[in-house]
Amino acid sequence: MHYLIGIIGLILVLGLALVISPDRKKINWRPLIVMLVLQFLLGFTLLRTTVGTTLVAGLASVFNALLKFAGAGVAFVFAGVANRGSAPFFLNVLMPIVFISAIIGILRYLKILPFFMKWVGLALSKLNGLGKLESYNGIASAILGQSEVFISVKKELPYLAENRLTTMSISAMSTVSMSIVGSYMALLEPRYVITALVLNLFGGFIISSIVNPYELSEQEDELIIEEDHNQTFFQMLGEYILDGFHVAITVAAMLIGFVALIAMINFIFSKVTGYSFQTLLGYLFAPLAFLTGIPWKEAVAAGSLMATKLVTNEFVAMTELAKSGDFSQHTTAIISVFLVSFANFSSIGIISGAMKGLNEEKGNLVAKHGLKILLAATLVSFLSAIITGLIF
Image (cartoon, rainbow, N blue to C red; front, side, top):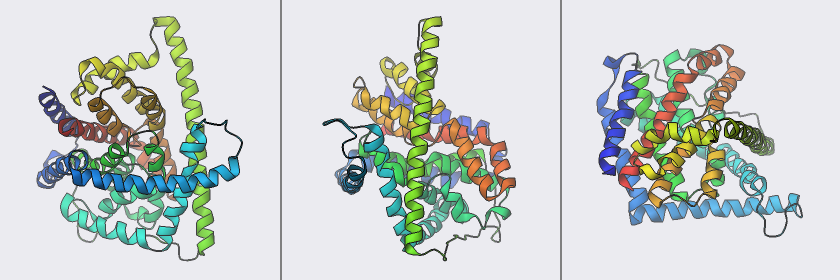
């Protein structure tokens, strides 16, 4: 039965994307079908085969090793802060971002990441029917993050059309940054995190190609990756370490504010209606959760987590999921994949703010399409969740 529901959900997600498309005649369906098939094949490989299990285990062990190395630095600075046997969220989940950000900076300085992002982006452009810059942006967003990625194409920004900026913003909001993937793995099973990264990459291309179709000339389709050649190694390292710390502190501040607000809103709603705000959101999102393949008996609780992620951020929802032991493995897989993305209301401000810092005019254009970008990125999350439900 859940297969039929999942197929209906898949049709509805693609249908909704088609409804909000401004020019359906420009949609190139052939690469979209190819990418959709690839999503199923890659998702099945990662979740259901020995090869996928081995690959995920290998990647998870790398991140676990990185988290242990990060733990050495955290323990040196914060030794004695935590009680014996306790695991403070800030120290164990957020502080490792500083070290992983430093690793990303080193790989970037050594030209390993730019080489990888450029050539994989070029290869993807042959597959997805999009421009080279958009394809590069999809890969780079998953490595650098939704705001930092635009720094790497700042030379291109003044010349980019509104539709290209929208597509790049959808890709950026649909993915997550490698600097915090390790933190996600501390809350969710690594195989779900890695599966979501792969599915969201192609899902971002699929949805953006439908909701924002356009054609490019050869002159428009150029790829320039901005590199800073004036920094020394230790200048770069210090910059990335501080960037990682800034991300960790920012996430911590967002969590404190959002969790406190949710607690207050839940209290108010409980007094007035007898139900918490998250429970009401759960009922609202329950049909959507059901369409991803989640059984109806778990749909309200699952919908509550999905709604929490949309109105706050993924860390709040992941923390609640990690505490909950009420879901089946099938439902946990679907919810986990759904949560691994930056698709939430605060991301509109993050992306437009980052863009304004580089080019105010382009930042205003992104803010203008903020809700459309968020809707598209949310459809990407639902698409990935539905595919997970069909193959898991």
